[in-house]
Length: 264
Image 1 (cartoon, rainbow, N blue to C red):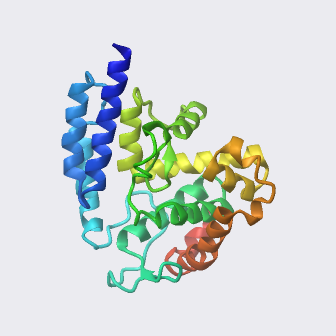
Image 2: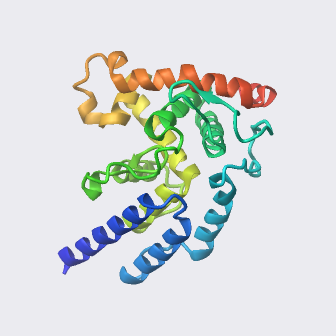
């Protein structure tokens, strides 16, 4: 009975991932899938229709290529300019979309709130490396086993997310099932970034080096111990390049300087 339940849960996750990967605006479809999964799994998924519908509506304008208004409490602002030509990503040779700009802004805000300017930049570098700030989607390698996949704009694994949640119980809500957690990692970008920020901080404390923390983020803490020259690791170099070529000039141009200084 236990094996049958496990297989059913994995099939549900696979179906949800496949449908999301095959549609550019799959938010309403996600609502249907999650509600169906909740019924099939005896109500273990507690994400409500209202919450998901709000997510769909809040992302509609960004998906259409129009900048969204900053949410309440945001301390940075993005210049109101035409959708095209806002910022040129010299690494990908393309303009950043409104959604990418919003994610870079949110990532800076979360990283700065959790630690400082250096951490905020590091987090932005990871965001750009993992999904090019959402451009590559929210689901990782579909060929990998369900338990080994990464989710969301920061490509966080379920096991890593669970570890963060255990150490920050007062800062996050509880998730009774992995399916519910995966749904949030995929659909709630701010939650995904917050989890990644806490994870990167924990890895930094364990490795005592931002470069080693990045290696651990990429390959796992245990495997990272086999990497002797963290600074020469390709992932680390690419994140640093993202910071230098994209995140830093983006922040200088689009984040409110007085407000950034006020946070220091």
